[in-house]
Length: 161
Image (cartoon, rainbow, N blue to C red; front, top):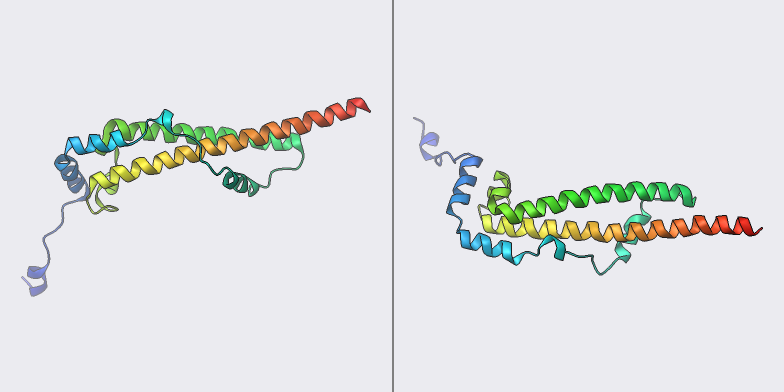
């Protein structure tokens, strides 16, 4: 056997084995405490600074024509509602299954095997994504209502002439 072969560290277990060990060694009470620290889905709300979402929407370059703008906004609303449903499902999954809901990679690599930190971060991240979607939907709905008023207002003005 060569000198380098003898001095090498023992081969690390595969990712799945490491993740299984992290799950097995985690204190269920600590996992439950992290889950209880997180808010229920229904308690997650919109963000305070909606002006940021208006700026995000400005990048969409919505059509100037109110009818076309309404079509585009409805499409964006549909997409955001789908995103929200996925995010809420993922959040519920994390709260229900704890470490079991995390991938082997998430348990082993980003947090150096600290499964509790991985769970805490995953819950906070998905919470923030849900809040983002709720805020974006509010702004999109407001813009849709504005486009509708603009479209209807234009029709009323034509009738008056």
